Length: 455
Ligand SMILES: Cc1ncc(COP(=O)(O)O)c(C=O)c1O
Image (cartoon, rainbow, N blue to C red):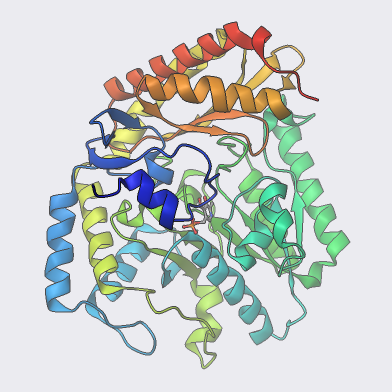
């Protein structure tokens, strides 16, 4: 008998961030906003794969036909000293949707590569301007910016960094914007002021003219959908300008409609120098990412400086054709309007879950939401160690999956349930998701006395 997918996986794959001794679910098919396992059981794609299946699973025929036509016309030519129509058209399309001044794109195969590209252009830009000593970066605690060695330097998750330290880029990590965990969290203005003062202090500590780049997500994913307080991004912009530091908006998740705008920078009304994207660009129908570069930063590279960076598949014709097709579908189907129209309902329904004893905080924006879980709502005491593993891994994960929902049970900072379904999800699907989450959290709340004690 032919080996099963699970057997082949166990014999021949090394899965990403996966305990290979664990049981590994096998998904074989997708349709609409659901995916199906080998037994035909459907699950709501409650995290859009990894925040990337923004159009869900029903546009394979259309995007497949586009890919097929492109393969017949021109399967591959590089973007190393050569051009071809699709990546040029895609660059122009992205520039037309991006904030003013961001008019130039460097394509990559994914998000980590986009972040690497941002760092390398920042270094080369400063060197071209007579400041080669700008070699340090500022990022935020618990942020995920990818895992290739450059990007990993910016990632602020200790367990992910530890095996590979010391890392390539000297990076200072400052607080993220989690109001729920900040001493000034109840006062948005004071919170913004405190966070900006901390950033300023970090820059002073590192010596301002040695800092090349500040990188942050519009809404930070790891730690649970952490939005910025009012004025935060304007403050980052002002501080970076004052010190000659480039500001990079890492929008690998937040771009392409996740927050109800094409880009997160538009949601919060700022213009970064660099903007990284990937995932939703092709709605996950091809592996592609990129870096948007402000005209100001691109300037030396238009005047003789050669950007010393390139990857074989950057700007791949088939990926570019698929991305153009996916953006076209987003426009045709009114996907941003869908997110904007439904997110107030989502917010109201999720906020109502605060009556469940283990729900500490509810936060998010657009189609990007998290519920932070606590042992005690009054003290905000968190779950940690064996207790957190039990809550997320044994109780919530099993309960939600058996009720047909795939979402993320995030333990990278304080435990959180994360929801980010495809951007074509309607209110009925959100209601189904939230009912399953509510059931899971109530079920878990009742079982807390059975939890193993953390040592
Ligand atoms: C904000 C952010 N930056 C970078 C990355 C890395 O992207 P990739 O996994 O495509 O390399 C991710 C991945 O989740 C991300 O969320």
